[in-house]
Image 1 (cartoon, each protein chain N blue to C red):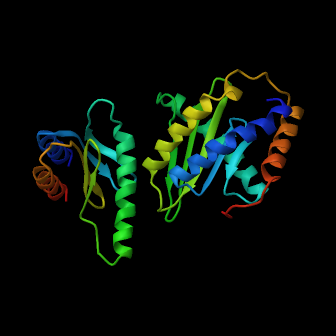
Image 2: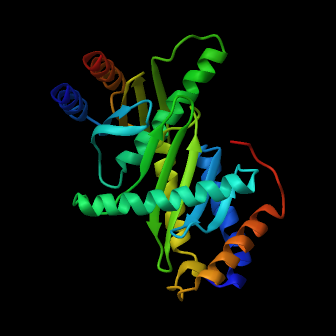
Image 3: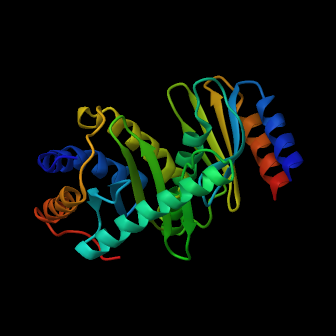
Amino acid sequence: MRRGDIARLIEVLREPMRVFVRESRAHIALLVNASGQVLAQHGFVGRYQVMNVAALAAAANASARVLADLTGAGRWQYLHHAGRSRQLFVAPFMTPSEELILVAIFDEHSTLGLVELFFKRFASEIRSLPEFAEALPPVNAAAFEGELEAGLDRIFAPQQSGKEI
Amino acid sequence: MSDVVSAALSRLSQVPGVRSALVVDAEAGVPVASEVGDGVSAEAVAALTASLFQRTERAAREAALGGLGMLQLETEDGYVVVAGGRPLLVVVIADRDAQLGLIRLETDRAVEALR
């Protein structure tokens, strides 16, 4: 992904993310790519929280994919963890340009079914965006690190509203 | 349990005017079993009706009306009836000219059978 794309991507993803959060009643949501690069977020206030969750989501996606391959289960659909007060939903989806992962955290005001339903609509909308219509050229490690930083700078630059997890 | 669920759905589906019938996990909002008509997504109906039931139940409690037994939604083309509670909800989608009394009776029976 080119560095110049990040600002535009973050802009075009803002509205679909807002709709997903409103409809699913998730209170925290994060969209990352398979490398752990943050593209959109709602509800986080801390940059390090976002970085940690993004890295863990990418790692969980990679592990789940290998596990699914090893067990012949095919492509994994989502990971759901129901805690006592909060639930975690992690789901990957493919776009023509790259694989993305949505992480959502919700409580008793939502349900797994509701989050999954609006995740599918969210994924469908993202797939139709021209910004995700073409395969991306590979990037080297230095460029990737720069883009990661640029994405976080951009996401946390406009406002610092949200809930602490 | 699965026989009970299948039998309940089968009875509901045979009521004239019933388009779809579902048994839904109330906590997760996902279908446990369903017999749905063409163009109806069991997953979407389960998620949205469970959410509606949950919120209406909350509103009823806030209004000091106690627990919610049955929720009936009237639309331009028909009815949605949701009944039960945790862990299972019974959802019925019916045509406008369906016999609503019979549907409510069979929905109650399904809820009893699933308890």
